[in-house]
Image (cartoon, rainbow, N blue to C red; front, side, top):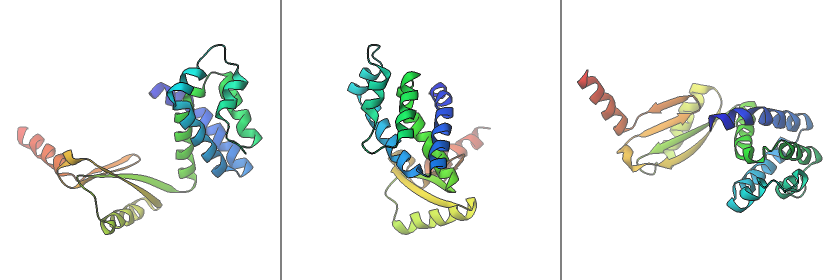
Length: 175
């Protein structure tokens, strides 16, 4: 996976630069998300790798109606270089670049059970204060945490789960 991210990164940067310069970042974002969803479909995925499929035909499978010409050329470039399988990684990296430019931090809050809206809002406010940016919060449930929550916001992970606290206590007791 790391190798595919390494290969996808320059394509994502080029796509973001083209979209930013043309003022069409939201459109590219939607078109890339669509193309990535189509590319990971098992039937389409096997078809995209077929050696007899022309690059233009492969790119044509992934173009959303109304996509601008630059996006269509971008897909053609990916097809010519046999990189269409990287579309999910490119779309993800594109969204990361977009969030960075919009000064938005994406945080994932994983808790043992559903968190009340007021608690999520207080977590969002605390993260906004810490990072000095807007925060988009995504939630997940993991019953193995026993209690508390784990907050993953980019490079920062805050483990306030009971499972994490017990693991840290066990480590301290065994040293």
